[in-house]
Amino acid sequence: MGPEPKELLAHLNAATGDTLSVVLTPRGIELSAAEPDFDAQMAAAREVMARRKRALRELAK
Image (cartoon, rainbow, N blue to C red; front, side):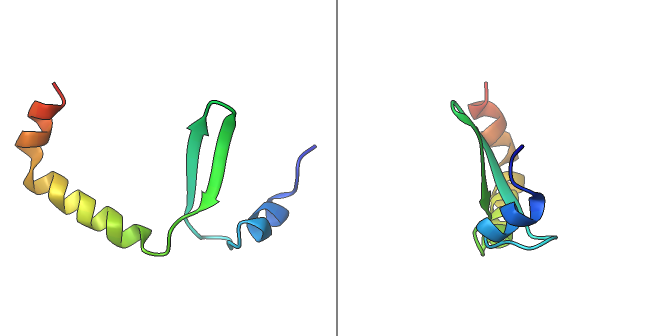
């Protein structure tokens, strides 16, 4: 059996309620603490996506 959730959070230097990053890799799942400015980065990305919706849709084709 693997580590307990509290041990994982301590290892990641994270606490209950923190945002974590989950990435599927060829070796399995990578779990890490999100960058401190993650929310700001996501807000900026959403703004750009909203403004450039048509261009992004064309690029996705």
